[in-house]
Image (cartoon, rainbow, N blue to C red):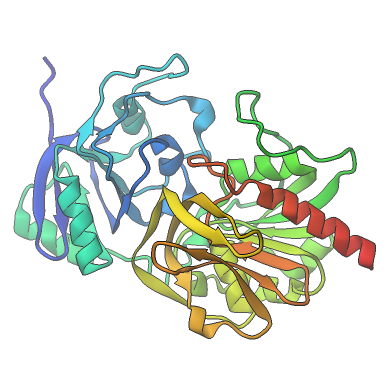
Length: 379
């Protein structure tokens, strides 16, 4: 029997928990966040939006269906560390190419099992955003707590520029044949969209292609003139990690694009767009991270269950008269969607592309396409 390696988790408030390593050896720190998804751990770990965060899964058993390479949402893992109550060593899935512990070790993800994830979740809900560290190298409680208190937070960090692509590229992949076909495909008429990569997930790009867009992805710092030189029909602003107010080059570029093309923003893109249009953002006590958040769409009157990952939000009291509140979180009243009253611009805080999560909101990509076509017809 292989000898197991001890691992330890320390929080800046002095809490220290001991468990077992189920990933790579090492030591990683960041903002402690809990995710309420029952499945989708691979998509979560490869989502660039989780850069700077240590992810705690609230569901007690994780890893039972293993890992399938086609489920990656980017080319690498981004979460700083991974925390679970119990890790499954068996992958019961015909698609699996490895077990989750094997994949975590191979991808350099520090992970710990056997700790009280319920305690960590309740702690975060009560005390708000906390820094923590997960280590297989240090077992001294005082040393670990000191490291947690010295850890860098996501506040004021332009993490989008760290996770973004380095050069522009074209994305052409549609959904895999096995993906649920709830979103209607586009017509033969293709529209050109430039997507700012603030930490884009692959399924967002697939959703755009499926809806009828030819997609060119550009880095987070790309000037507006370079984007307009590509002659796009529309602009898309992706999800991403960190503090939206710190993405100054992206804010500047988007500010110069407003009024020149239809724009759709998701998550960090929604926050950046809101700042450009005169609103303010703030860090939430513990954020929204999961695949089961109810949101009311004021346009349709429907309630949709949504996938979310954000620690910052738009301040509803800061909205200028030019912006209309279109979506609201039914758990806490958070701003979940906006649209401009005059310009062809809208955005949502959550993830309509899912992966993981429900597909209730996938129709927003079709709404974007319809907006682009209507705007073109009016000019």
